[in-house]
Amino acid sequence: MLGGGNPIGGANPAGVGSTLNYIGNHAYGASGSIDVDNNQTTLMNFNTSNAYVIAEFHFVRFDSGEDDIQFVIEQNGEDIAAVETHSAQYRYNQIKILLEPFSKYIIKGQNTGGTASIGSGVTVVGRSYQ
Image (cartoon, rainbow, N blue to C red; front, side, top):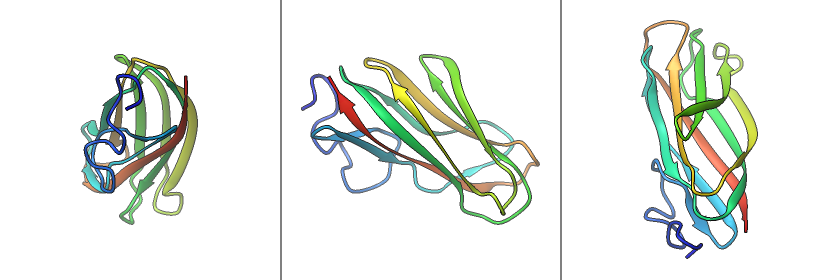
């Protein structure tokens, strides 16, 4: 166990879900494909342990189309970062941020270019440090 965090491997070590999993000093998670429309939709929702994590978030839209998808990272109730995919031609984005210890993170997606449901997702990989 990583001092108060998820057990090694987390609740779902090999699959997708909304939490952050830890194995040794590595952290990872994947939302899978979730339909995102013009309302904010939660893709991931997790708490960090007593370690900080240097994390890379990879955002993707799985469907073709011209609508833009905005992805927002919220920390402890405040939006701290956002990226947007602009149409199917640019359907992949990434951002690297520091995840602080003992913090709550919510990763949200929203179709800002229309009302259609677009399959979207996020994966996060990183290394934890104490």
